[in-house]
Image (cartoon, rainbow, N blue to C red):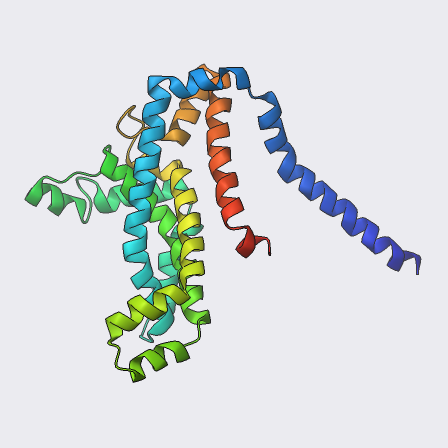
Length: 261
């Protein structure tokens, strides 16, 4: 009986320890940040350029990931074909792949001597490494799987009778998809887009490996934080606060799906 009564206390103690491990670093970041210098840091040309690049590249990556990821999620959810499970595993692999390994893989595929990059550079002069386009490509690679997972779950969980009813009323497949299917999966799509954007704007490893760290061209906010840590720790803290605010905003937007209503 004594052991049975002690179990809740053991679980509660471990739970509090886990919460402290996750929360205390964030509290330390907020408490130790030099808040009085925040306006000056945000107004500096280097930080402003990194912030603009991060926002622009992450939004572009989100757009590309949405245009490509929604059809991929539909394919994985609605079509049976040989190798579908293998394809799903490969498409979701960037979620668990070390970011630096992802950057190396991008170089081998889209670099000037890559499988795809060499023909593109030879035929049309298109180059991805160490360019802003390379930043977008790296962010799409690491972030799109998060959108695919969420949207595929939406496709699998929706009630197909609404699509069947639309078809019986004479709606074409594209009209049904646009007017019925997409509105029904809108919560899953919104959650996937939010997670995709948050992952894209926080990407570091694949970006620095594939696109480099060129101020004004490929230096995003996470790269600026890394560079600032070596020369100005206070600036690194302030830049980290900006990314923390973005993460909190995404978590707040997804609170209904991740934390429950």
